[in-house]
View 1 (cartoon, helix red, strand yellow):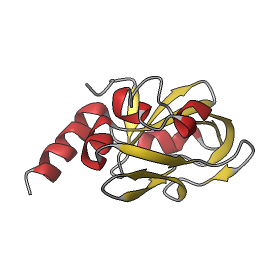
View 2: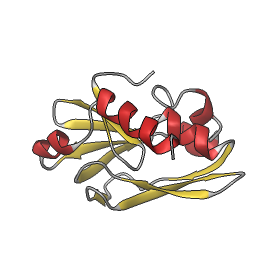
View 3: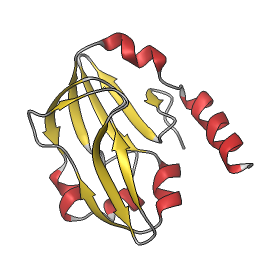
View 4: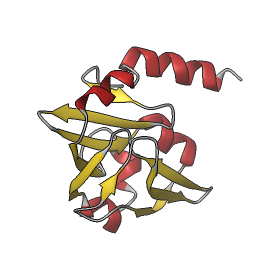
Amino acid sequence: MYPDDYRYTKEHEWIKVEGDTGTVGITFHAQKELGDIVYVELPKVGAAVTAGKTMGSVESVKAVSDIYSPVTGEVIAVNDTVTSTPEQLNQDPHGSAWLVKVRLANRQEIDGLLTAADYQAYIGAETAH
């Protein structure tokens, strides 16, 4: 369920790195916890994002949740499909419902993120409480 070539945050974002670009989204666990997603707010192309800082939000019928950037860099693409049809995040959070693409400022930040196995252990421990 959680691709091994992605890295994950404890705030439930994922990033897939290819070269100096990272594609960012929210995890299956996040969308499941949120329920039906009705609105997504994302940064604009050209915006600077900082690892661990808010870069947007996701609103569901239950709650509004911040989206945190897993890396520092510049937004080079935004997935307009999820802003116009946010329910896609419930259907394909690890695929077509990616949020933004970021040009990485510091590739070493990836090393500090969770692997798929670490993330699954983390959410397993989180749901056990």
